[in-house]
Image 1 (spheres, rainbow, N blue to C red):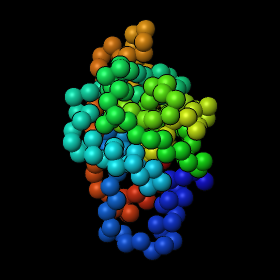
Image 2 (image 1 turned 30 degrees about the horizontal axis):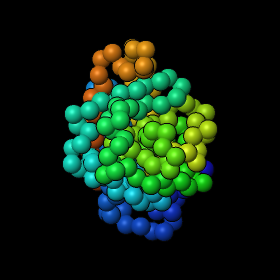
Image 3 (image 1 turned 180 degrees about the vertical axis):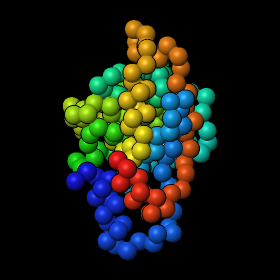
Length: 190
């Protein structure tokens, strides 16, 4: 059973209130909407994503690297400015149960020896077989619960020699509230 289904099962069997809202990530793009569940098991990455989304950090940025059969990566580009500022680095939060499966939301980073994440950059695994060579090296902190068809469309766009889309795919990243009933409905449409 995938991780999101496990969480949903806990909600159902624990009798959690249908009315309790859960905060999830919303990534709006010209191709459509992507919804992401943010894991409690990675509290620093979850809090960082939520803060940057609420601050509108990504709203002037785009998916800057898209590779079919690998990932769609958004946020700051791979530049020294994006990774040198300690304010924008997070200690890794590796978890053996949070893997680079299809639809995993992960934190980008450079080759720093401490494997610290760049808060400003995230990626979504688009490889249907997963990218398990990244497990234990990059923090997975969420999972797409709606919109993998959008991610698939994003990685299929025309791109240049460094895998940057020729036509920018803008980001509008938000935190929205959703109720258990809506989560169950989303799971049934997957």
